[in-house]
Length: 162
Image 1 (tube, rainbow, N blue to C red):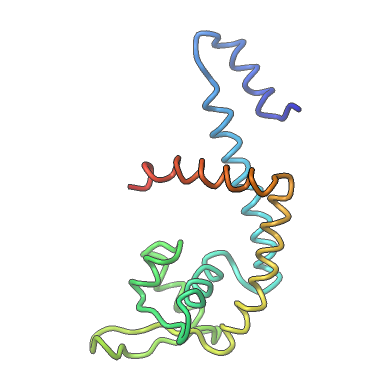
Image 2 (image 1 turned 30 degrees about the vertical axis):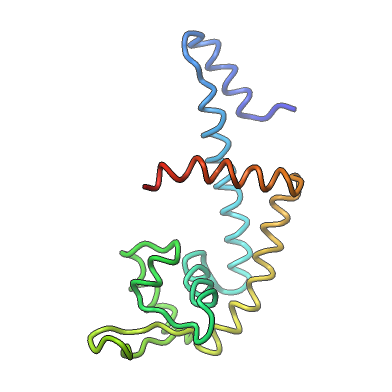
């Protein structure tokens, strides 16, 4: 079974038979897969009035367990939202009534971010649809293939993220 990347690699092999272009097949497919999966996840989040970073913040607070509260720094470290985007993201989520910021109990100068009841309801409603989308995207793979792929991706990511 051939895909578009096989065609591209064939062209490269013709033009540059002296080079091993096989890395392009992996990186190209991962890049295309990230785009396609990202688009699908965006559609799912949009049906709930969210975008990916907002979902990530709400999901991180939810994963933290009751009382679903973290400092902005802990939230940033536990989520996939960058430090530069966290304040802006929290502003929007607070304006929407999904989170609230309160003075920290442990640090008089700091704040805590807590899921509101509205935010908790929204993440509980969104999560099953998110997982349905991910399962649909991974449907061509068996359970073992999913586990093997997760292991290989972890092996690839670990040295790159250090």
